[in-house]
Each structure stands twice: as structure tokens, then as C-alpha cells.
Image (cartoon, rainbow, N blue to C red; front, side, top):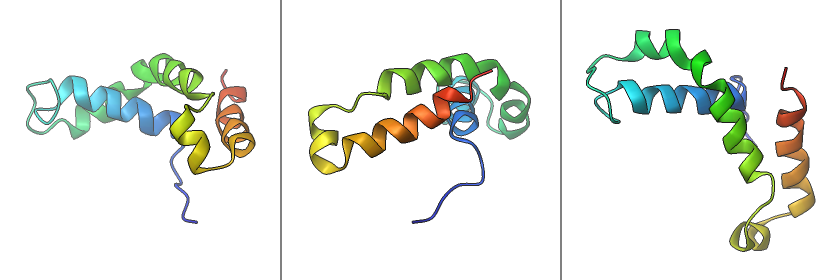
Length: 82
């Protein structure tokens, strides 16, 4: 299975920053890449909150895969929180 070299928290924080800044989201900047690069750290707490909410899979997710593995994967990210 392919894996990302960018940590999950950073990827989520970048999405949140992009949604706020980019015209593709709710922002007004047509070229928000630089602004996202600069501001994603401001969204790290929200990214952790999102993952904390997802630590328990819903019924559909549980039926699709291994719940214990899911919990371990999300837990591994949450344990790295400074």
C-alpha cells in the first residue's frame, strides 16, 4: 500500500488552511499555495481535533475494515501530539 511522506496532521492542516484561503474553498486567493505553506501550522490543533473525533470508526467504516488497526493508526498520530 502506498504511504505519504507528509504526516497526516500536516496534510489535514493544509486542507483546512486551503479551504480558508483558496478560491477553491471559502477564500478569495486564486494562488493560495504560498499562504497555505505559511499558515497550515495555525490549523494543527483543529487537525488533531478532527483525528480525535475519528478515532472511533462509524458502523460503515467498521464493516469495511479492521477496527483494531484503525484505532492503532489514528492512535499513533494522536500519541505524537506535542
